[in-house]
Image (cartoon, rainbow, N blue to C red; front, side, top):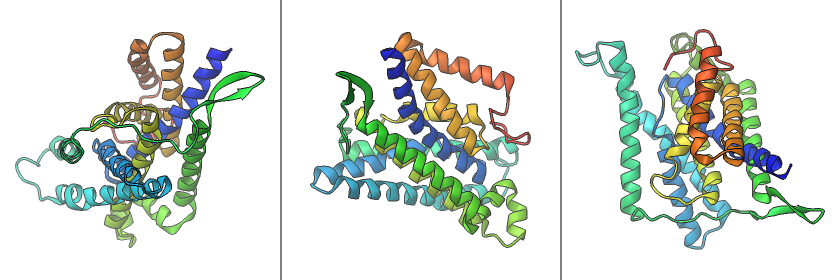
Length: 303
């Protein structure tokens, strides 16, 4: 029973973080039709900034907020300075095929990931460092038994669920959120309706950057921070997004928690070496049964 509870609590906590990463990927995919592989590079860079601020004596909470803002600004700048010019580039012989026009932004995002990792290595000397948690990472004691659930886990789940709730309300209840949804559904119709599609697109990149930075801040206290430390999180987050449906924010959340549970239970009941095999099996099974993902729409873009 203790093992089951440990796996359940761990899966919930990690699944919440994977849900955030998947949500960031889905928001950009819906808004721009691009898979942003630089996403966790932005998270890594902003988390290093937060770590430096804390080391220099600044408040954890100030560093926490600054890192999220830095992630949002980096996301918007990535769209404005790199992705939008690539998307608006006039057709040339190189860009004449649809496949090349789709591949170039992906290649660019991978290049930006490499640049961010190299910059982090130069600025922080590729230093692997710990990152503090704002709350205790010791399990709760109930009836003289230590539960495999910590105050930090409660903090992670609370922050993620609050973020997901506010994001849902933003997209459903605000004018800007509705404009972003309209742009995601059909950018040309949205533009003709008077919506500033370039603005909503950049805002989707900013949302993605902020969500990724938040995920980086929440996961690094349980692992060391290094230029490559979040690469695996990106892979898992992408898997969660595909499982849930690349065009569905709700699907991204479901996919994140599902993949988190699979990883946790395999790690506790089998061996960590089989985790990736289990993730692959879940991915293949879902794509066979639901090729568009659990909540993917029929007309979703294909990867």
